[in-house]
Amino acid sequence: MQAVPGDQIAATAARFGAIYTAAVTDILDRRGLVAQTLPPELAPLSPEMLLAGPAYPIEGRPHAGHDYDTSIRKILGMLGAVPPGHVSVYQTNDRESSHLGELSVTSLRTRGCAGAVLDGGCRDVGFIVRDGFPVFARFTTPQDSVPRWDLVAHGDVTIEIGGVRIALGDWVVADRDGIVVIPAAIVEEVLAEAEQKASVENRIRDAVREGMLPLDAYDRFGTF
Image (cartoon, rainbow, N blue to C red; front, side, top):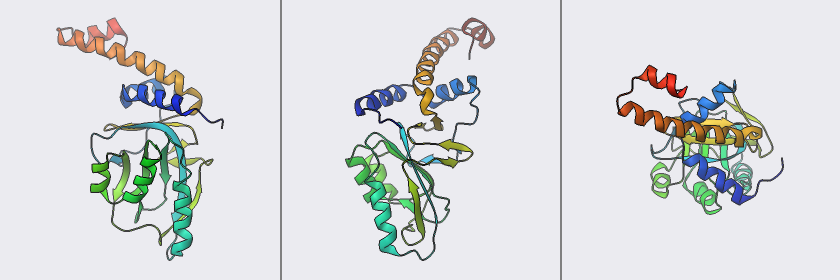
């Protein structure tokens, strides 16, 4: 995949940050992409957290009794490989351990990463929330993954979470409603259409507040 300039990533992320995931999923639905949202169990550590950025996929598996030094070196190498502006997206295949904590988040944030999404566990929640780094996770636990889990692949790998395929460079957008994945090839088109939808919905909202009935609003604007 060809690298995207950092300023372009930042500009696209800012545009996504000005709309909302519902508008994005509605556009994907219209295109026939009706299964692009991640499971609702993956929730923000704090309700106000938002994130948007290209995905950096990470995959692992349980490994009881893993050698600590071998395991942590692989994990630390992966953390240092996540490009600025990107979202670390974990398919851990694990329901027992924490795969991200405060020191890892400090490293990612310092290097300009956009956030993390874990089909897995997180710990040090208080520290992370105070730091303001956006993290969406399936569960929290104090139990460390290092001696219990093995990092299998990261970067140029395709993972699957809840039936949604996520490849390097696909865009991940999340707010308190949930997490949506946009295939890299159509990000700009979907974003432009979602911005237009959000603009129309602002007009609908004003019309309804002024007394227009919902069906009349739908007939006038073509959406609701």
